[in-house]
Amino acid sequence: MLKRDGVLAPDQQVAVRFEHARQKQHGDFATNVALSLGKACRQTPRELAQLIIDALPAAPEIAKVEIAGPGFINVFLAAASQFNIVGTIRDAGNEYGRSNLGAGQKVIIEFVSANPTGPLHVGHGRGAAFGDSMARLLTATGFEVTKEYYVNDAGRQMDILAISVWLRYLELCGEQVTFPENAYQGDYIFDIAATVHREHGDRYRRPSDKLRTEIDDPDLESQLDALIQRAKILLGHEGYRYVLGVGLDALTADIRGDLEQFNVKFERWFSERSLLDDQRVDNAIQALARSGYVFERDRALWFRSTAFGDEKDRVVVRESGAPTYFASDIAYHLNKLERGFDRLIDVWGADHHGYLPRMKAALQAMEYDPDRLVVLLVQFAALYRGGEKVSMSTRAGEFVTLRELRREVGADAARFFYVQRKSEQHMDFDLDLAKSQSNENPVYYVQYAHARICSVFRQAAEKNIDTSDLGGADLSLLGESHEIALVNTLSRFPEVVENAAANYEPHRLAYFLRNLANDFHTYYNAHNFLGVAPGLRRTRLALIDATRQVLTIGLELIGVSAPDKM
Image (cartoon, rainbow, N blue to C red):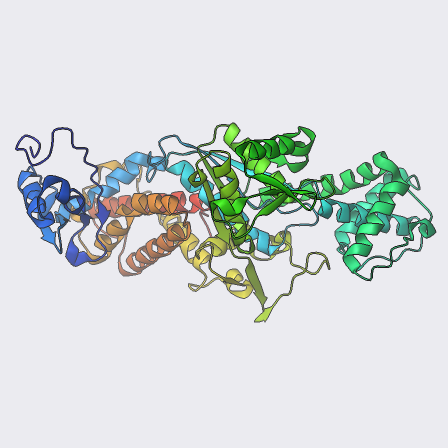
């Protein structure tokens, strides 16, 4: 109508987006469409808002429409129409809350990617819970998502793993060795060494006196590097690769198993070493060189990342001729783009925040849109037990593993706790709270709401109350204040899911679930569901069944189960 009357140009594209009003006095929904179109229509936003309202057809679902502030349009639903959401939810089933926001865009999300040099610890758990929840949310909003783990199976850390395993193996063979304090100390190293000894006996034994090096450098890291080079000579290429492979395979399998038990499964495990074997790193360096932003200095190759806003230029090939970790990362991201992904999402520890400018610079130098790379930062969680902070050191082997955390508090509690805060915020993980069965424990509180609803339906079955045809419930019978609060919260779910996905903030969903659980528990404590007239009983059962359904979907989106009993 507005185009017919010349208010809007015939070819004017209009995207109207409604959001739930934040305050009840502002109605149920609000839109800023008049503010966004006012200039193009040569109208003040309030004038355009009034024209839009005047053009709206009458609808029994709408009680009134008002203009607020500089030109917002607030919509108030008729009381009876608010409860129609119950039928909408039950009809939609598991599809409720899903949308086509992503329009099929191909997204790869890479997360955890811890070095396979030891078991995952509780710090990695937060990245795992966050990354997997984001993948679930993006899938639910219409993106085509691939989850990938980047296995750092090349470089110095792998050499430290190999020397750690081999020295423990030599001890099992009866050799007297001095184990470096900066090698990997955990018991898992003994276990891997025992596997080598059990399967091969003394095959890889070498006299310990031949391990002595002539290095005089007091630096422990330099001494460790010299010891690694000595081991490579003594074992030979095949022997060294075997020892390294045993450690790598054992720890990668351990990580994979831990993550699967944590309800995290990856579509692909991508090997860093494959980038070197397939010469993809060399190809990426050549692509950078063709861009004109690679130069030589001090017999090393540098990428002029300062040309794209980085604080300093970066080495891509060392003086020794070996590529840097950064070069491997450039090759990895180039590979992702070549695989046809529209958006690359990396979940990194907060200590990697300075890495983003150089990575975007490399993409831009190779003429890719740097905005296709999205980096989400996750703070490691500090673990507390009995009010005391638990210290963690991977090399020293002093850390609480993700497996230990899962066994102590359960995967559900761990995942919920991890995602209930913004990922970049510091987090203190209280083990005692996570194990408590109280209203202060958020995951218990939410899961208990689901279990309570299931209990109501079990009681109905015990009393031979038919609950098979709740679709015929008379929703006009609803109207209590607790029912209004509950349906208002239920109606917000699709918007919460979209916003959580669009802003990469799964904590919004965790917050929503706590509010929904609170609304249900309040309703449950104030009203009777079964001991009322049949018509009202059916209607209230339909309402709490819709609530159960949203709780189930919401918990699934953050990888948490919805138990029937607790």
